[in-house]
Image 1: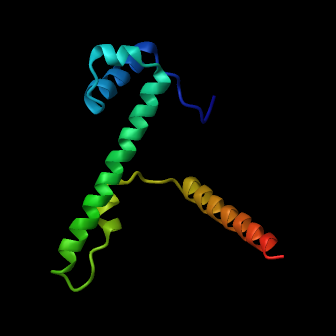
Image 2: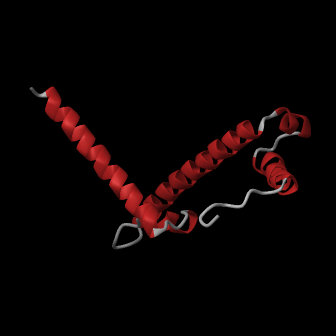
Length: 115
C-alpha cells in the first residue's frame, strides 16, 4: 500500500534492536533479552530525547561564549540546525495547525472562565 512503511523482517528488527541496546543504551545481553520490544523502543526514545536536550544545552552555552566575540549574537538555533531533522511541508503545516488549535482552545477556556 502506498504511504505505508514496509514491516521489517525479524532479522532486520533484531539488527536494529541489538544496535540500540548495546550501542545507544549500553545494555548487557541479559538486560536486552529481558525487555519487551515496546520497553526497548521507549528506552531508546527517552535516551534520544535526553541526548537532544544535552545538545541544546551545549549549543546554548557555546552561543553565549561566541556572542561576546561577535557583533551580532550567535543564535542557539543556528548552532543546532545540523542536528535537527528536516521537516516536510506537511509536518510544518500540521504543527502550525496544532499550535493554532491549542491557542483557540485555550482562548475559549479563558473566555469561559471570565464570566
